[in-house]
Amino acid sequence: MLNLTPMKNFQNLSQKIINSSELLNLIPALKQEGKKIVFTNGCFDILHKGHVTYLALAADFGDVLVLGLNSDDSVRRQGKGDDRPVNDFDARATVVAALCFVDYVIEFDEDTPLRLIETVVPDILVKGGDYDREEIDPTKKTYIVGSDLVRANGGTVETIDLVNGFSTTGLIKKLKQ
Image (cartoon, rainbow, N blue to C red; front, side, top):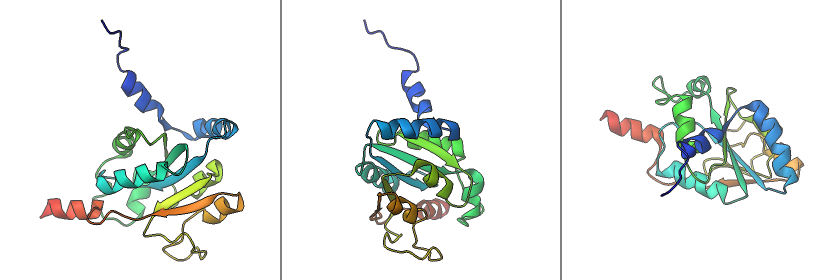
């Protein structure tokens, strides 16, 4: 007879969603262990193949993937539409934390994840292919926030091609038709 701890998987899932003080304790410990930390961010409102592919590929750049997840207010300020986010932070965080290659999820309420990037100082900063890892002008839409900081600390900035035909905005539009 198997001796299974009730809710073990749910507890593991919940422990992946962290707050700022947990992040402050976690990052130095991971770096001391020699772990290569990858950071990315986004809304991840309605999870789809494009998101999953992107996060899996981002995780492949290092040992630990830290995902900065926009708060509900931050998503609203992104101008994605009055009906966004479709899922609240807790729902979005739970779904992305369930992915085996996402190690930690942390909420940010600002318009950009710069404060988180300053805290994590990742070895690798990753964004989607709609950004330009070589762009140095912060006023350009393709500029990757925090890229200068990551490079100044010896890290790298990477982009991942988007999966054609998959976007949350596209899915919402399709559902409304």
